[in-house]
Length: 325
Length: 151
Image (cartoon, rainbow over all chains, first blue to last red; front, side):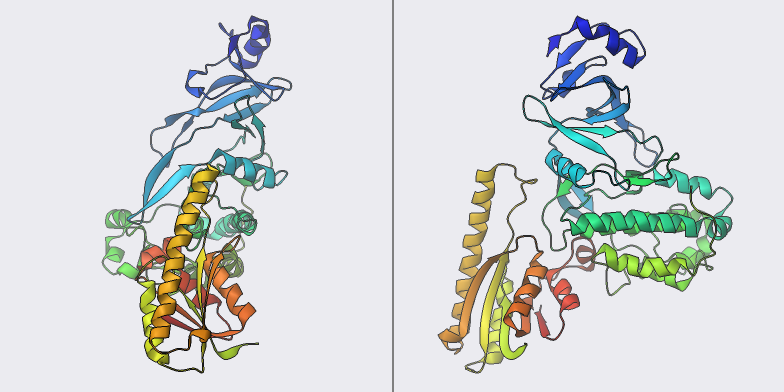
């Protein structure tokens, strides 16, 4: 890292404000020291740092991610997200079980190469800095998470959403889920499947998976947690909101009294998977897919293809509605 | 071709997997009509989980040693129950790109085994939902063969 006053003019132009000190960075290991205006030189490509990314999750306050930088391409000025190498290992509690999780920059770099040109996934390239770090330079997707889009579609209430939008949303989700199945068939898992990891691009209409750097220890079904995540996305997409025992106690206490433990998720025991008990107009074919994610099921989906084999025809039993934006 | 008297019995790192072998021994007794192939499948730790190749190799070697010990124990249980030693074979296999269940099914098809024998650790429904279960995955995939799940 060295001071590079000769880069100040272009860096200021890209940052949209006058940069004081500008440094040229070829080794990104000490990412905490990076500042706005710093220029990363990665295998001859340059990017100017314009800020730090934040992550919010389902409405919680946003947390800074100092290893993820907003940046601009030095040459064409396009917006980028730069993910620097940050090794993190932690235990995540899922359904009451502790799972060892870790970030793997190499895994994300591998998947980026695998999905290159496939709009169902975020796009980007991996560059090596002088320390050998796998720095991932990603195209910024201008849209927001899919759950926000779904909530927008449901503003007129669930019956309207069911009539006008659910089929269109599920048609798009099937393509998104199929993308994950494709990833699995290539021996990779997403590692952190949740609804805010699918971004919608309003310009192209694409729904794309983002963030592939999470991974976890080996297990009997290496894709089990990804499938669990798909079940949660589907559940939200069908209900257009979170239907939990808490919500039911506030909104539909009459229904809550009649529910059994088998109607809920085995992992998140307050999450009602048997949504037909709240929305009686849901066709059985769709509700039966949700029931495969409930505590009452005898058989869980092991592969995305099994899920799609039942979800895709279930869409035909819905009002055709409009295409999702 | 599936051959009814060829049995594929699996053993894993958990001591409880030997319970299935004890059960098999008690069912077969001193029969010399069956051939039992004892299989243990191991998975190399992922480079994502352990980037250091030396540590990865050490972890794999440690697991293989443990599984080889289990296989030897399992063979001894069957032979002591009266199965001819020549009718009991053992194999330690790497899963490679397969899951453990996938490797077991591949071996079953290759060897024409008419019966698969597995132990079940008492995995809860929630665990099976989240992480899968080798015995459940084998049961779902098995065709043209019997599956004994001993719990």
